[in-house]
Amino acid sequence: MRIEINIPRGGGATAHAALATRLRRAGHATRLAATAPLAQAPVSIAALFALEDAIYGPVKDDLFAAAGMDMPGFEGDPDLIIDFQGDAKPAAAPILSPRFNGARGEIAAIAALLSGRAPETSIVIERVDAPPRELARGLPAIPFPFRVKESRNRIRAREIDLIAKAVARFEAGDAGENPISAMSSARSIAVAPLFGLAGVAAKIAARLRALATGARDSHWRVAWRPTRGDAVRDSLKWPTASYAVLPDDGARYYADPFFFVHEGRTWLFVEEFPYATNKGILSVCEFGPNGPLGTPRPILEIGCHLSYPFVFERDGAIYMMPESVGENRLALYRAVSFPDVWAFDRVLMDNIGAADATLLEREGRLWLFASVAADGQSDWDTLSIFHAASLEREWTPLTENPVLFDAGSARCGGRFFEREGQLYRPAQDCSRGYGSALAICRVDRLDAGGFVQSVAARLSAPTGMIGAHTLNDANGFEVIDTLGRPGSRVPTQVDFVNQDSRG
Image 1 (cartoon, one colour):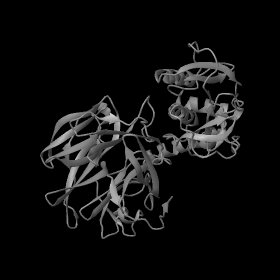
Image 2 (image 1 turned 135 degrees about the vertical axis):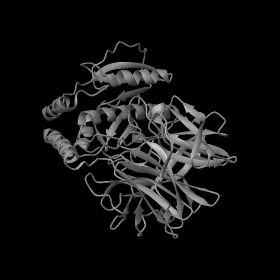
Image 3 (image 1 turned 180 degrees about the vertical axis):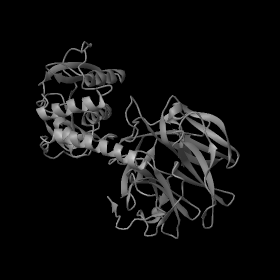
Image 4 (image 1 turned 180 degrees about the horizontal axis):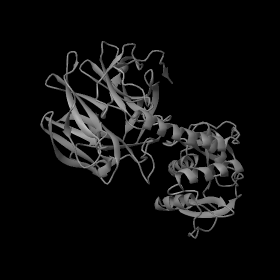
């Protein structure tokens, strides 16, 4: 296709050049047209960005930075126009542009960030003879919500991803989702400098709290309970019964819990994170009829951080597929003497940072779900899927990978399970921070042609906690991990009093 990208009359930015390059690599002819008005940031936003530059330093790989636009183009009319500002006039060619919580323009994205949340980002196609329709949608992750300038950059990176997906769907003949209603307007952004000062205050308070109490911001706890027909998989709700906390000594935390049953015995595998080394290792402890039999003991340590110990059995062998993003590969380990001795078996996928990889066997094929970050962006909001006939065969990515850009339900949070004939996957809800809650997603489609899911339930953090991001069960036990508030004492149990599931 011939695609025209509108850039401001005062010059283009790195984002325009990056999108043009990406589209050319996909086989499209592109050109840049200086037809968009040059937008000036309000004084309050300029002041906020100056404050953030002074405190945090310039944004790395700034997609809003000016860039050279000396690129080849094409002659004649375009088949498609891309307009980042969303204010292009109707033209003979369809126009793609982003919306943020339904509103046009970058100010709408900034307004959402000033409210403390990432905007729901959609790519809309507009035609002269038809109402606007949505071609792609995502919810970007913002790891540092008080840094508006950096968060704006992350949103722009996801805009590029979503535009590329929308272009592919348009080329395939996709007309888009239901017609879009009238666009809302962005809220006032006069409070921008105050928002920046609030971020500074929060940073100072966190530092003082850590110095005064020794508290850490990310002390995870593993919690377990016996189930009696009241597992989350049965009702898609938190139980009324409490979870007992797996004790730790404060010098380490446990997270990413997975059960595995072997020869009638139940084993709990966890990430163990000693603060002294600042690097995750994998550990295990056995469960008896009344719970854990002792403290988790280390079983695997390598040169980089390890987490998410996904253990499974296949063809008579027991394997573990941990997250090892630091190696830039997804490796498989085999139990030499279960559960304590593991040996490297093979590389499943190389040159890939696959976070929280989760395996599923379905209808004679293996399906591998993982969050894969690209170009320095977050892996909190992406989901990619690969499939293969066996562990020994090459993994094939789905054409639309990443199949999801959604901080609320992309990243895996435990094993798949079945309920009433439907397949479900626990996913991390990172829309309010890393691992802030769980989403239970029903798999509506999974085949070589695509993937579709629906969020059946959202499960908030336990009472008094600020996060929950893994859920698993086996052999009459259920296990979760949860994040405590900085400076709070380690509880002996967690529960869900007045904690309703949120849709």
